[in-house]
Image 1 (cartoon, one colour):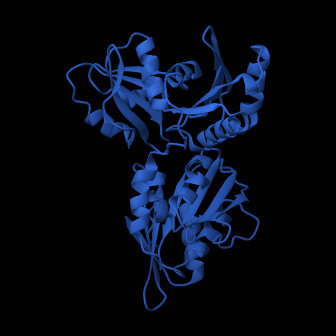
Image 2 (cartoon, chains in turn red, orange):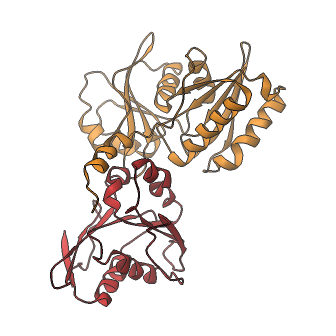
Length: 154
Length: 221
């Protein structure tokens, strides 16, 4: 696990872009951390790197929002999900995100730890922590055998 | 007559059976459950020939397996049972696979394995002899852990679609045989379900048991 410091929102966006470089179709990325820690800002960076043209906002009320992607990596759809408002695990299971990504897609799941056992061992996790000076530390946990080359710390 | 519905893998299949004969049909291999299931059932009935009202019992595979498939299969089975008054019976994908292994002459220890996606298997142990006897409950396991835990003296047979995807991993068990079967047979399911009492059916999503605890213990901010 390595961590990356983000001082400004632009740093968090850049972190999302950096992670996107290592992602492949079928990947599930779980984003964890308190409200306001920068999870949605991070998602905009991932989306930009994958060629999402539309605006990426928090899917808190829609639970999951599909975005069409334009890239040469075989990732056709980005599913951006937010489990903050989910009341029961049945709702998470019903989304079937772990299966949807098998069809040339990728899932970014805010508050994804709420469905932890559904994602299996093969997922990415980015843990956001926020200190009193609004500096964010992003810790990256890669799936087994997928440790990013080139490093994460910046 | 009995209607069998199978949606626990990326394949969708259905079958019909009465006391004299049975048929089954692969409707699609590639995740088109919602598109092919009901027309496929209509096609089977037309070919038999029979009407939907002739169906007195519906046997549905309720998992574990591909959740996006199972919810189509289970919802369709429940709706048809509600509409026609047919009895509804559930069988698990794992017991169907184990029974198929027995029908192919396998005996001794068997582990039925269904691809659980995300690097995991749904698994259940059986002893095959005069009968198919379950030795534990359906559970989630990583292929490596299943291999590490296989310590029995008798050679084990892995059966199911998981024995196709993870044949390489499972072959590490000394003496093990992999019997790959891409989808559970509706005819086998109907034979099992013919002898069972009707009961409400919900998709068996084995991971839920683990995940509920995790969800419940996490306080909301």
